Length: 155
Image (cartoon, rainbow, N blue to C red; front, side, top):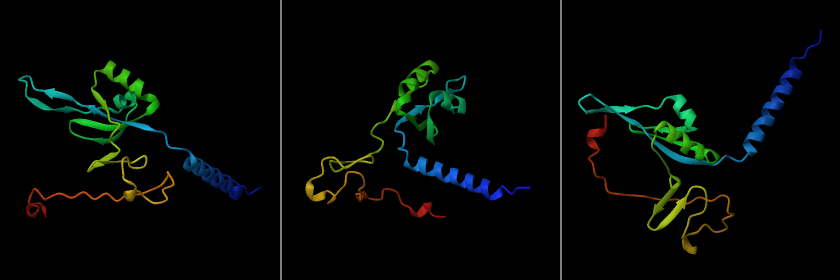
C-alpha cells in the first residue's frame, strides 16, 4: 500500500500558497460608494414607527456589499462595472440611492487628501520629498473644542 499523505499535503499546500500569492498580486477591483435609503414604516395614524431593513436578497439584487447598516440607510460598495445595473435595479424596486465619489477624501484648510492618491493643491514645502507616486503618508491632525461634558459618559 502506497502512502500518499505527504504528497497530497504538499500539493494542497502548494496550491494554497499559489492562490494566496495570486490573490495578493491581483489588483483590487474599484468600487463605487453608495447609500441606500430605508423605507419608512408608518402607523395607520401616520406616525413614523421606524424603517424597513433591506433583506439579503434585496442587497444581492442591487449588487451592494454592505459597509455599515444604520437605522435610516445602508452604506455600501458596488463594483464600478455594476453601477448601471444598480441604478436600474433600484429604480425597478423603488429604492432611493446616492453615489458618493467623495467618501474617500478628507478636505482640510483648503487642501484635499484623497485616500487613493496624492493630496491635491499642496504647496511644494508641504509635500513628501521623494514621493514615488505609489506610497506616501500624510499626518492630518484635526482638533476642535470639546462641546459636551464627558464626565457623565464614563462608567
